[in-house]
Length: 288
Image (cartoon, rainbow, N blue to C red; front, side):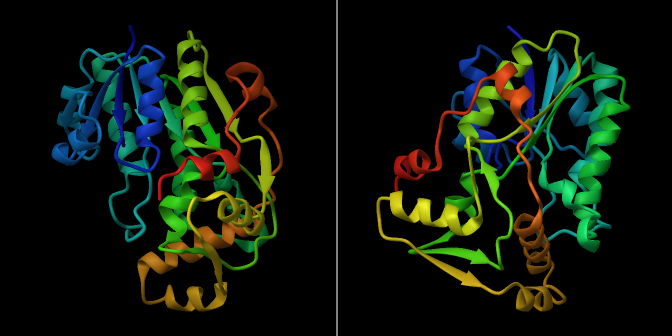
């Protein structure tokens, strides 16, 4: 049984990925700063207190594990100058991995980070994500890096506010929405069959939608009435001058609206299985 230290389990994709790794036969240990919070989310999985900015706690947690799975992100309220899990944190993780016999790092990146540099778009958050990939590749460790499209979970966990589904700006390009459960299955299959090979996979669902199209499918299939509400992007940009969180929301919305995503998951589907959950299925399955 392979043992994985899972870092970032309390995020939006922590639960679906952790559950699929367990179903695939992996033994998980969860690293958390707030152990009480994570223990409530995962009552049947061991939780160890630690911090990606504390190498000592990382080394202690990694002992006895073969792999580390990273579900890290830039906090919406943080600034470029702040300590970042995907910058200083990843450097610490790699250093600790080299001291403790970790064989593989698995890391969730994103497709949308590739919008950096397109149409004059510049954002330090995407630059950190791009650099994180290169740091992992240069680490000397085996790696599995996943580049997912937009997750279906963002609709209900980030955009749904009561009876309103909040949209921002004009959605120009479709995205291949993927469910966290399908992504978790593909991650588990990749890690079970990785051997000594390095892996990189684009992760996309079976149906492309713009935000407007996705909102309609979601609202049509959600169990209680929901109405999409659209806000313009420009006022958000101005508000972002005074609010770091709104500045983050502006940048991520602009990128998601405009990134010209293409289908590039044929190899992932062949190697890891085709996603089976449609957006309609996902919305129907939710409990309001």
